[in-house]
Amino acid sequence: MPSAVTVDNVLMLFNMSKEKIDSLKEYFIKFTKGKLLYEEFIALKDVTFSVERGDVFGIVGLNGSGKSTLLKIISGILKPSAGSIKVNGTIAPLIELGAGFDLELTARENIYLNGSVLGYSKKYLDGHFDEIVDFSELHEFLDMPMRNYSSGMVARVGFAVATMTQPDILILDEILSVGDFKFQEKCERRIETMMSGGTTVLIVSHSIEQIERMCKHVLWLEKGRVKMIGDVTDVCMAYRGKY
Ligand SMILES: Nc1ncnc2c1ncn2[C@@H]1O[C@H](COP(=O)(O)OP(=O)(O)OP(=O)(O)O)[C@@H](O)[C@H]1O
Ligand SMILES: [Mg+2]
Image (cartoon, rainbow, N blue to C red; front, side, top):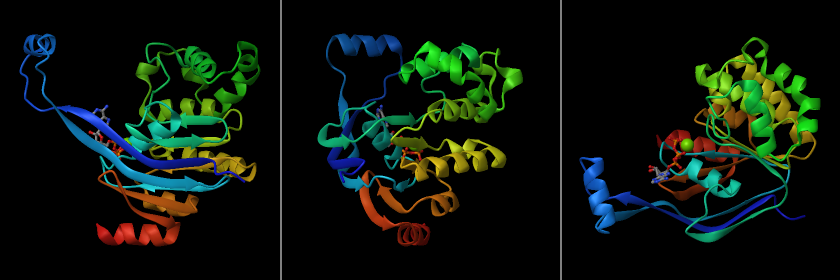
């Protein structure tokens, strides 16, 4: 059986401005003269691993270690500077809070917008609308612009839309941590149902307890490199021990 996700020797470089530019005007002058100096920042290097189908796979690491960058590459939002990614199946990425939402629009409008971005028809969304709203428990706030939502409320809508149907691969970047404990439990139950239906889950979380509770295998990133990969207990013990 092929792996759900295969990451082979991925390198990700970002351009970082090298000098301090004090004004937009100065930026444009340098930009038009082609005199902007950049330094390449290595966000990921030599990253190789695979995730088996049906696995719940955690990614841990300190702030800036490259976790979100890696998930964006797997989701196809970013293209790696070198290396390759193979993904088998449909993917539902929940990467950044509000990504995929237009916060000026209401939740009702965003459910349709986000759903159509994920490839669902209007008719299909009409049929699932109540279910999405029930899961998010935001009935009273449906017609309020989402910019007035709390981060937990945004996460509720995002999770409800992304998990409305069963994707082959579900990607969660710190999404559950902004939900309250009741919503976290509800999400974890839905994830468990999906797992039993064969969905592969990739989770980034700063809560080691959550990783230990949910994941089977874990990848530890340190400064963009794979520090360790293996069974959840081994990797979490080493990670806790190091810091
Ligand atoms: N578009 C970008 N341009 C330049 N640098 C970037 C860009 N995106 C990410 N980086 C840099 O890449 C590094 C890794 O960022 P990333 O967001 O992947 O970290 P993370 O592990 O998700 O951190 P956190 O735990 O804080 O969410 C950081 O140093 C960040 O500044
Ligand atoms: Mg991140």
